[in-house]
Length: 157
Image (tube, rainbow, N blue to C red; front, top):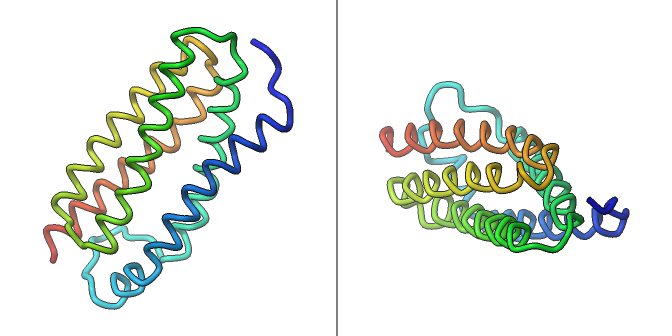
């Protein structure tokens, strides 16, 4: 593995955080409506937890992708980065489906696909860079928790 440069890390983190930031900006009205009108399940954290958690998770995703990008060029690396980008796209659109369109059932199905893509990302990252793969476990756990919350919102509303 080539050692990733600070520029590689910066690009990986900035790209991922930008996707999350754009999603956050696009759903700002939907989240306000959600907070004021939607009944949430037990264990729902305060609203401030979400941007903090997602900022950390996007940074971990970006660092992981940078580490994978720094591995030797190969078909395996290409597939890993494609899976990374695909899950990032699913991540982006889930929040729009959930908060803006409030299609809670469809958003749950979308989230389950995202969960599978995260698991696939971990599996394709692992042979290339073990640490990059392990850094995605908090993301998988958070999305598992998000699935519980999504299911609860769907059932309660």
